[in-house]
Length: 299
Image (cartoon, rainbow, N blue to C red):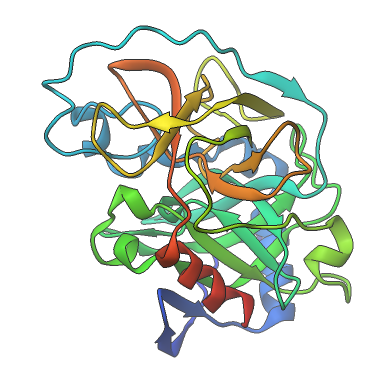
């Protein structure tokens, strides 16, 4: 029998800064393994297409940012920064999920936590005001051209910053998924995990990773950008921008402090402006996003 969409049954209550999604691990793993075929993963849409209003508001790469200043802002000079193709990294992968009957794709990264099973991603890859919480959520580390070399890790709970859940506030576009064990192993044991930092200094230099899927990319391989973060002068958000031309699909991909993928994760790919080419913004990892992480790490 062909596998159809699997909707995880929510638990009776919610947790701080997020929600809990509970289901039988064995049933979920088998069903989602069957559901997320190579073809279905390749055809999933970048998550920036969830809310059709984002494009109308002047946001380009990912979701919405500053509400009023975008249309009035002068066009910024193009920042020349071509994303660089990378070999797969075991900790970094693609996130697949369903919202309102449509399959979507984002990026994510395994981070250190007490449960050794936590994935960092963007808030808009877990929850939307109109659609609610994502279902069919899996993390595929080291994804490459339809292959899942470490398997498909099903989520048992999703946790986003409370400001994102309540009003989709782009300043808090950070979230975490707690995944089930796979073949008796935790995610960290299977692929490793990055350290994660909160309330760190601004204007640091970052290496951002992700799987851009919107043109001119196709979402089938890992890319990275490198640069020093600067303040958002267009929308006035608390987010920071780095030179980067990655597109939709890279949402939720990790920002590491320093050069390469071995540093501390301190943000995720979040959004960009149509009036400012080749700049990717990521949320400041402050206390609210830290609360979502704390809720996830003890699940």
